[in-house]
Amino acid sequence: MFGIAREVVERLKKQYPAGSRVELLQMDDVQAPPIGTKGTVIGVDDIGSIMVRWDNGSGLSVAYGEDSCRRCD
Image (cartoon, rainbow, N blue to C red; front, side):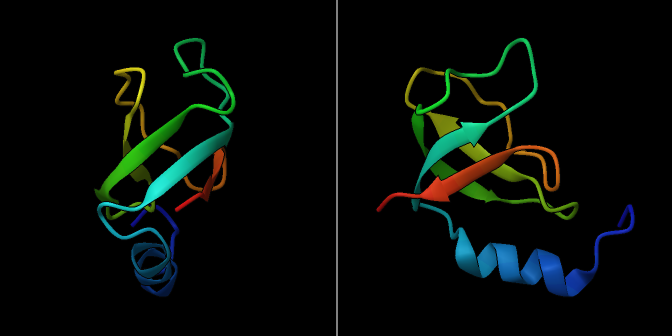
């Protein structure tokens, strides 16, 4: 799993269940939604990325260890 422990992935899945709302805090990508954009979690994949349907239509995932978001629901 690319060096990410299964326990970390399971913790992220509990912390960010599908349907929860998040706000983007940081994403280093030229196509990233603006900081502060909110979205709905679709799920967490096996490498710890939080898959989000952003309110602005973007579908970029929050990469574990690189990007950050917070729950806001």
